[in-house]
Length: 362
Image (cartoon, rainbow, N blue to C red):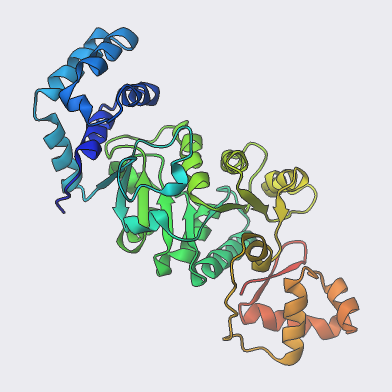
């Protein structure tokens, strides 16, 4: 998988290869040059910067690397691992990340890098402690997105992230963002899904392959998820959940934030309810998202429903989600509704949560 990188790309790959050098110093060195490839021809500015702002040892290491086979060794390492390096000077660097103040210098990628600049993208994230019914709903939403040519962006954790992955993975319209290098994918709980995504979707990280995960990498990683999505759906999370960082980044970037609503006292959805109170959009059906985002929803004509089932199904999709409210709207008795609601569940087009409320799945 030999890749021909430009001189500017090589300069950034070289600079990002210094794993013990902080981002702020790498960015400062880049800003010293009008053309970053001048690092190779005029290295004295970078060497001076490192000596003055980091250490004499760092400047010596940089100088030695310039006069050795270090860059070629990096390229061989990435090639052997099947890693494509997308730098901020690359043509396929995601346009959505360019405006970010702390955009990644390099993205290490496995899979279809064309997804980085897909026409429509949407982030879906949630807590590891996501209720089963919400996980099913999230999977259904993700499936609806990809069936309408929207690429899903998410993390790699269990719970909400995993549900989004499962709903999108078969389509290949899926970008996963990890908080470690690729050498540590096998230690992830959902490694099978990650490895499958590498084959038909895309997995990216701002960390070189040999970088292990650290707790503070996860909130930093979430700025990429938020940046890549045109909007963000928060499906679950308590008030201390790391999912909050993704929501905050999305709001900072001026993106639309959507949330599933939760009942009073439900700790797994406290974050969602708080975000809704602060102005995030409440979501009970996929239509709520598509209308705001301007996406055209392709009607699923495969639903095999009777006329009365379709009436109930439509009401649930419009937010009339409790049996009592449905009974009022349809004029039916509760005992008449129960078989209809059970039929919708059996057909996989509606799901009931632990508050006896229904949500459509297709």
